[in-house]
Length: 256
Image (cartoon, rainbow, N blue to C red; front, side, top):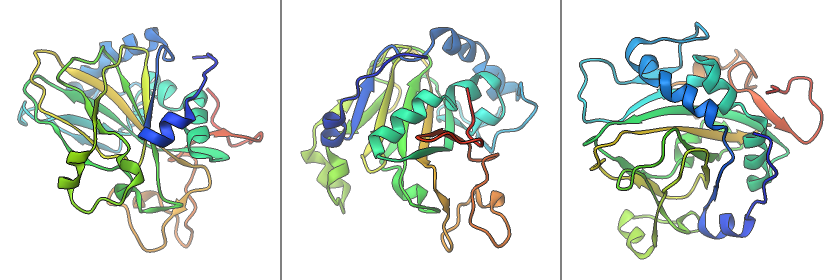
């Protein structure tokens, strides 16, 4: 994934997202594609470590999206992708951070006729750490099926929107990416996805990046991640929230 990238900062600041083509190693995506069902259906974890959360199991409805939180802990190939220094550097440059940590990832499997993803912003779900706020990335494992993709409300990250009815005034952008591409979006950008009306699955990985100096919030708790909080300390341990990029050399930096 060593490719020089020219980032369109103006587009990101104006629209709330930026797409980058042909940056992800296709061979790496093929490895993940071949094994993702084994990870979901059979809990085959190459690292021997369980992910933090699995939403869906055999016997559940086939018409709901399926998610695995922090699949990077469970699989070496996913770990290599999610903890990529290059992707973390892009997130840092878009946000102005000096360092980047991984907040969480999600392995996403959306079967045909599956329900959509409700319209939301990412940042309200990340108030449990400070400084708050994330930069999110979405990586398709297969070419994005038309009619089964993310929808962005262009520029909605810049305004204080109190009612989702207000989103009608924003232009919609449908994310149609080829394998090997990625889209980064602002944590305040409204987005969602409709019902998968195609006959194809949607398989993707999303990553939430946060500032490298992030700590647990003193009073706001995470329903999933406060288990990793130290007693009498708000520090976020690198074992659970890896630091993946820094402007300066850092012996604690995860290298890949």
